[in-house]
Image 1 (cartoon, rainbow, N blue to C red):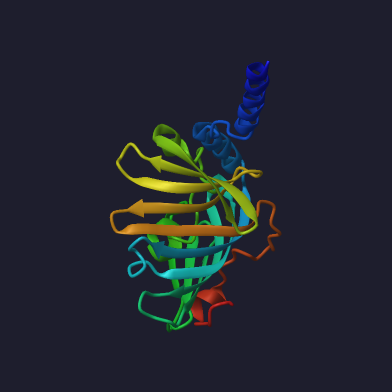
Image 2 (tube, rainbow, N blue to C red):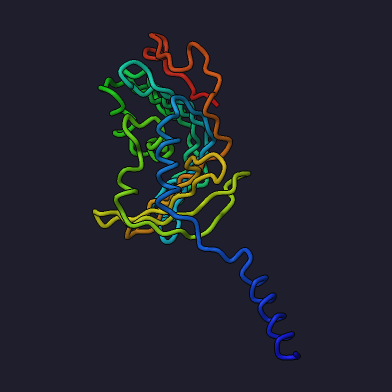
Length: 237
Protein backbone atom coordinates (compact mmCIF):
# COMPACT_ATOMS: atom_id res chain seq x y z
CA UNK A 1 0.00 0.00 0.00
CA UNK A 2 2.82 2.38 0.84
CA UNK A 3 4.40 1.72 -2.53
CA UNK A 4 1.20 2.55 -4.36
CA UNK A 5 0.61 5.61 -2.18
CA UNK A 6 4.05 7.08 -2.89
CA UNK A 7 3.80 6.16 -6.54
CA UNK A 8 0.64 8.21 -6.71
CA UNK A 9 2.35 11.18 -5.04
CA UNK A 10 5.23 10.96 -7.49
CA UNK A 11 2.81 10.87 -10.40
CA UNK A 12 1.05 13.99 -9.10
CA UNK A 13 4.34 15.83 -8.64
CA UNK A 14 5.51 14.88 -12.12
CA UNK A 15 2.22 16.12 -13.51
CA UNK A 16 2.53 19.42 -11.66
CA UNK A 17 6.12 19.84 -12.82
CA UNK A 18 4.95 19.46 -16.41
CA UNK A 19 2.50 22.34 -16.14
CA UNK A 20 3.79 25.36 -18.05
CA UNK A 21 6.68 23.39 -19.55
CA UNK A 22 5.17 22.99 -22.99
CA UNK A 23 6.99 23.36 -26.26
CA UNK A 24 8.08 26.78 -27.51
CA UNK A 25 5.75 28.57 -29.92
CA UNK A 26 6.28 27.76 -33.58
CA UNK A 27 8.47 30.54 -35.07
CA UNK A 28 7.11 29.88 -38.57
CA UNK A 29 3.55 30.43 -37.36
CA UNK A 30 4.60 33.70 -35.68
CA UNK A 31 6.35 34.86 -38.87
CA UNK A 32 3.30 34.02 -40.99
CA UNK A 33 1.02 36.02 -38.71
CA UNK A 34 3.48 38.94 -38.66
CA UNK A 35 3.74 38.76 -42.45
CA UNK A 36 -0.03 39.03 -42.85
CA UNK A 37 -0.54 41.71 -40.18
CA UNK A 38 2.37 43.94 -41.20
CA UNK A 39 1.35 43.80 -44.87
CA UNK A 40 -2.14 45.03 -43.95
CA UNK A 41 -0.76 48.30 -42.48
CA UNK A 42 -1.35 51.31 -44.77
CA UNK A 43 -0.18 54.11 -42.46
CA UNK A 44 2.07 54.20 -39.40
CA UNK A 45 3.76 56.43 -36.86
CA UNK A 46 6.33 55.47 -34.24
CA UNK A 47 9.21 56.63 -32.10
CA UNK A 48 12.52 55.13 -33.14
CA UNK A 49 16.00 54.53 -31.76
CA UNK A 50 18.95 53.15 -33.70
CA UNK A 51 22.31 52.05 -32.32
CA UNK A 52 25.11 49.53 -32.76
CA UNK A 53 25.82 46.48 -30.58
CA UNK A 54 28.29 43.60 -30.37
CA UNK A 55 31.23 45.54 -31.78
CA UNK A 56 29.34 47.93 -34.06
CA UNK A 57 29.10 50.73 -31.50
CA UNK A 58 31.94 52.67 -33.12
CA UNK A 59 30.61 52.32 -36.66
CA UNK A 60 26.88 53.04 -36.46
CA UNK A 61 25.44 56.47 -35.62
CA UNK A 62 23.00 56.67 -32.73
CA UNK A 63 19.59 57.99 -33.75
CA UNK A 64 16.41 58.98 -31.96
CA UNK A 65 13.29 60.50 -33.42
CA UNK A 66 9.83 60.12 -34.89
CA UNK A 67 8.51 58.62 -38.10
CA UNK A 68 5.19 59.21 -39.88
CA UNK A 69 4.42 57.41 -43.14
CA UNK A 70 1.67 56.19 -45.42
CA UNK A 71 1.24 54.83 -48.92
CA UNK A 72 0.13 57.15 -51.71
CA UNK A 73 -0.86 56.71 -55.36
CA UNK A 74 0.63 53.64 -57.04
CA UNK A 75 2.05 52.65 -53.65
CA UNK A 76 4.37 55.66 -53.52
CA UNK A 77 5.86 55.96 -50.05
CA UNK A 78 5.10 59.25 -48.30
CA UNK A 79 7.18 59.94 -45.19
CA UNK A 80 8.19 62.50 -42.60
CA UNK A 81 11.14 61.61 -40.38
CA UNK A 82 12.61 63.87 -37.68
CA UNK A 83 15.83 62.62 -36.14
CA UNK A 84 18.68 63.52 -33.87
CA UNK A 85 21.77 61.74 -35.18
CA UNK A 86 24.93 61.40 -33.10
CA UNK A 87 27.95 60.24 -35.08
CA UNK A 88 30.43 57.80 -33.50
CA UNK A 89 32.95 59.70 -31.40
CA UNK A 90 30.68 62.73 -31.05
CA UNK A 91 28.46 63.80 -28.17
CA UNK A 92 26.55 66.48 -30.06
CA UNK A 93 23.60 65.31 -32.17
CA UNK A 94 22.69 66.76 -35.55
CA UNK A 95 19.02 67.46 -36.21
CA UNK A 96 17.75 66.18 -39.54
CA UNK A 97 14.37 66.41 -41.26
CA UNK A 98 13.50 64.05 -44.11
CA UNK A 99 10.26 64.48 -46.06
CA UNK A 100 9.03 62.78 -49.21
CA UNK A 101 5.72 63.24 -51.01
CA UNK A 102 6.31 60.18 -53.17
CA UNK A 103 7.84 62.25 -55.98
CA UNK A 104 10.43 64.48 -54.36
CA UNK A 105 12.68 64.14 -51.33
CA UNK A 106 13.65 66.94 -48.96
CA UNK A 107 16.52 66.44 -46.55
CA UNK A 108 17.26 69.36 -44.26
CA UNK A 109 20.22 69.30 -41.88
CA UNK A 110 20.21 71.98 -39.22
CA UNK A 111 23.87 72.75 -39.83
CA UNK A 112 23.59 72.75 -43.65
CA UNK A 113 23.50 75.95 -45.71
CA UNK A 114 20.35 74.87 -47.57
CA UNK A 115 17.99 71.91 -47.82
CA UNK A 116 18.77 69.23 -50.38
CA UNK A 117 16.01 68.34 -52.85
CA UNK A 118 16.04 65.36 -55.18
CA UNK A 119 13.54 63.45 -57.28
CA UNK A 120 13.04 59.73 -57.36
CA UNK A 121 10.62 57.06 -58.55
CA UNK A 122 8.66 55.20 -55.87
CA UNK A 123 10.46 54.76 -52.55
CA UNK A 124 13.99 55.03 -53.91
CA UNK A 125 14.80 58.14 -51.91
CA UNK A 126 14.71 56.49 -48.51
CA UNK A 127 16.65 53.49 -49.83
CA UNK A 128 19.35 55.77 -51.23
CA UNK A 129 19.68 57.77 -47.99
CA UNK A 130 21.32 55.04 -45.91
CA UNK A 131 21.68 57.10 -42.74
CA UNK A 132 18.02 58.07 -42.62
CA UNK A 133 17.04 54.66 -43.96
CA UNK A 134 18.22 52.96 -40.79
CA UNK A 135 15.39 54.67 -38.91
CA UNK A 136 12.74 53.39 -41.31
CA UNK A 137 11.71 49.77 -40.73
CA UNK A 138 11.26 48.94 -44.39
CA UNK A 139 9.01 45.94 -43.75
CA UNK A 140 6.19 48.38 -43.03
CA UNK A 141 4.23 49.62 -46.09
CA UNK A 142 6.18 47.21 -48.27
CA UNK A 143 4.38 46.56 -51.59
CA UNK A 144 4.44 42.77 -51.14
CA UNK A 145 4.23 40.57 -48.02
CA UNK A 146 7.42 41.66 -46.21
CA UNK A 147 8.64 38.53 -44.42
CA UNK A 148 9.03 36.22 -47.41
CA UNK A 149 12.81 35.93 -46.93
CA UNK A 150 12.38 35.20 -43.22
CA UNK A 151 9.87 32.46 -43.96
CA UNK A 152 12.24 30.93 -46.50
CA UNK A 153 15.13 31.01 -44.00
CA UNK A 154 15.80 28.97 -40.89
CA UNK A 155 14.07 30.44 -37.83
CA UNK A 156 14.50 29.70 -34.12
CA UNK A 157 12.37 30.82 -31.20
CA UNK A 158 14.47 32.52 -28.47
CA UNK A 159 11.85 33.48 -25.87
CA UNK A 160 10.26 36.82 -25.06
CA UNK A 161 11.48 40.34 -24.36
CA UNK A 162 9.70 43.59 -23.55
CA UNK A 163 10.21 46.43 -26.04
CA UNK A 164 8.84 49.59 -24.48
CA UNK A 165 5.47 48.50 -23.07
CA UNK A 166 5.06 45.61 -25.52
CA UNK A 167 5.92 42.00 -24.74
CA UNK A 168 7.46 40.44 -27.84
CA UNK A 169 8.35 37.04 -29.26
CA UNK A 170 12.05 36.89 -30.14
CA UNK A 171 12.94 34.99 -33.31
CA UNK A 172 16.41 34.49 -34.78
CA UNK A 173 16.56 34.03 -38.55
CA UNK A 174 19.35 32.59 -40.71
CA UNK A 175 18.66 33.62 -44.31
CA UNK A 176 19.29 31.63 -47.45
CA UNK A 177 21.95 34.19 -48.50
CA UNK A 178 23.99 33.62 -45.32
CA UNK A 179 22.94 36.76 -43.42
CA UNK A 180 21.05 36.74 -40.12
CA UNK A 181 18.81 38.88 -37.96
CA UNK A 182 16.85 38.81 -34.74
CA UNK A 183 13.20 39.95 -34.79
CA UNK A 184 10.93 41.06 -31.97
CA UNK A 185 7.20 40.67 -32.77
CA UNK A 186 4.45 41.89 -30.45
CA UNK A 187 2.68 38.95 -28.82
CA UNK A 188 -0.67 40.76 -29.05
CA UNK A 189 -0.34 42.95 -32.17
CA UNK A 190 1.88 40.65 -34.32
CA UNK A 191 3.88 43.66 -35.52
CA UNK A 192 7.68 44.06 -35.62
CA UNK A 193 8.90 46.27 -32.76
CA UNK A 194 12.62 45.72 -33.14
CA UNK A 195 15.14 44.13 -35.47
CA UNK A 196 18.83 43.42 -34.90
CA UNK A 197 20.42 43.17 -38.33
CA UNK A 198 23.50 41.07 -37.65
CA UNK A 199 26.72 41.25 -39.65
CA UNK A 200 30.37 40.42 -39.28
CA UNK A 201 30.96 43.86 -37.75
CA UNK A 202 28.22 43.45 -35.12
CA UNK A 203 24.54 44.37 -35.03
CA UNK A 204 22.54 47.42 -36.09
CA UNK A 205 19.49 47.72 -33.86
CA UNK A 206 16.30 49.50 -34.94
CA UNK A 207 13.79 49.70 -32.09
CA UNK A 208 10.24 51.10 -32.33
CA UNK A 209 7.92 52.25 -29.55
CA UNK A 210 4.55 53.98 -29.47
CA UNK A 211 3.52 52.33 -32.74
CA UNK A 212 0.23 53.59 -34.19
CA UNK A 213 -1.29 52.07 -37.33
CA UNK A 214 -4.07 54.66 -37.59
CA UNK A 215 -2.12 57.87 -36.98
CA UNK A 216 -3.54 61.35 -37.45
CA UNK A 217 -2.03 62.80 -40.61
CA UNK A 218 -2.41 66.48 -41.47
CA UNK A 219 -3.04 67.57 -45.06
CA UNK A 220 0.45 69.08 -45.40
CA UNK A 221 2.42 66.45 -43.46
CA UNK A 222 4.36 65.36 -46.58
CA UNK A 223 4.19 68.60 -48.54
CA UNK A 224 7.38 69.97 -50.08
CA UNK A 225 6.71 73.63 -50.88
CA UNK A 226 8.58 76.09 -53.07
CA UNK A 227 9.59 77.89 -49.90
CA UNK A 228 11.19 74.78 -48.46
CA UNK A 229 13.11 74.29 -51.70
CA UNK A 230 14.42 77.84 -51.97
CA UNK A 231 14.99 79.02 -48.42
CA UNK A 232 17.39 77.40 -45.98
CA UNK A 233 15.63 76.76 -42.69
CA UNK A 234 16.44 75.13 -39.43
CA UNK A 235 15.24 71.55 -39.10
CA UNK A 236 11.99 70.93 -37.30
CA UNK A 237 12.29 69.79 -33.73
